Image (cartoon, rainbow, N blue to C red):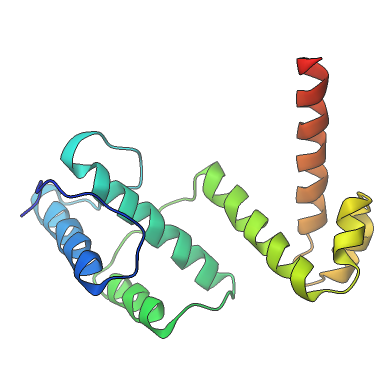
Length: 152
C-alpha cells in the first residue's frame, strides 16, 4: 500500500522495482498526478528517489546510451501507463553530460588530451553528434576557476 515504509536503494532487483512501480501507480490513483522526483520527506521519500532514478535511466536511454533489456522493458512499462517523465532538474542534466563525457573519453582518441588542455573546439569536433559537450566542459572549467578565486 502507498505509504508503506521502505527504503530505496538503486539495485536492479525485480521485487524492489515492482514495489515502487506499484507505489507510483497508487499515488497516481489517489492524487491524479505522478509523484515527481523532488526530495520528499517521510514515507514517500523512497518513491521520489525511485522516480528520480527512473528519469535518469530514461534520459540516458533517450540520448542513445545502451541500457539492459530489463531496463528497456521497465521504461516501456512506465511509458505504457502514461508516466510523466518531467523536466530534468539541473543536477540531472549535469550528471547526464558528465557520464556522456566519461564514456566519450573512453572511446574517442585524443579526447582526454583535449579535455585536459581545455581545447573546447577540438572537443566539439571530435564528438560531432554532441556539439555542446565542449561548451559544457568550458562552463565547468569556468565554475572551477571562479570557485578557486573565491576561496583564496
